[in-house]
Image (tube, rainbow, N blue to C red):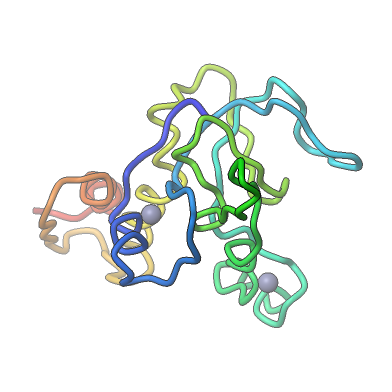
Length: 173
Ligand SMILES: [Zn+2]
Ligand SMILES: [Zn+2]
């Protein structure tokens, strides 16, 4: 892992607002470099820059087959399986599938999105959650149209992404 953002969901996982099996490594919007791939893995190679997708679609459930992979009912199944162990053998779980706050992590290839060459990992990391959340709020939830006014409260990773998405959608003022 090279960079990771801190999302409010990490707080919600740590205080029990969202369910999490412990011990776990949190962090779910991250960028890094592929160190190694398992047998049969295609699509990424060692040395490749990637960002993490904490909700990889299974492509076989009902929602996925309806063309709605963002509603995949199995996207968070990985959070229920340990992906590492403490030195005493205690299983460790990946927060939101990814465990991006660690120096290294293990994820299925479906949780990787290759990055173009030259993209700053610190900027790219937030593509894994905050940018999509802000963009989705503007375009899917609020359905902002050109000339409509918009109000953004808070300028964290999501708020800044929301502001940019509202501007791109033509919000004014
Ligand atoms: Zn998040
Ligand atoms: Zn699915």
